[in-house]
Image (cartoon, rainbow, N blue to C red; front, side, top):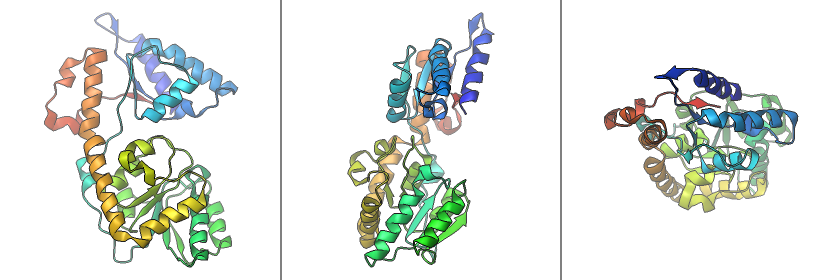
Length: 299
């Protein structure tokens, strides 16, 4: 959380090596950035962030979106800053084969309004009213789980929507032939990277760093909080499975090229060498890239 990022930098500022402060790198993943700068909490956290830059060798953002939020709410960093995207490992690229009883669509994530579950349920109701009965499984738990179950029942979707509880992502991927990420707000969600790496056809929203992942395929994304457009995108996947799988293969290759752990690690180690004088770490054997990243203060 935000407190961890603060404590780590304060502690590092008081530690010395050869009479010099330890090099400290910082990766914002949300935390303080979620606050409204007009609120008291926002002013306190953002004031600390500005002050903490003097203890920070470099800020390593996980998305251009996150960098943009930082600039809008805190200002241009006074220390070096760069974008190093999140990455997924080799095992994530092993294709997931749908189970024999796989349904049309999967949602996996925390069951809260921010994840757009209500929009997904509304989209499924729209499809049902159009005569297209799409079955979905919702994986996860969260504070609004009972609210969503009640919504599904009130929309007449109880027979087409199953709440399966929490489980590992790759286990959940086998439950459906495609995945929906209807989020209203995100940064650079790992579920999108993991599903893309697994070759799962996907419909997602334009929020946060998701367009950075889709890159040349970003035109397929839909606006958040728009059940009608979401319904259209789901129908497009379900109606043309061959095309959906071909598009998934393109996205999988994009993630393999730009969002692998090895690419992420190379970026982090390069930053350590350039901004922290840690050239010895950056020269580590490339065969060990997936396990070579030292700890980074995160929020």
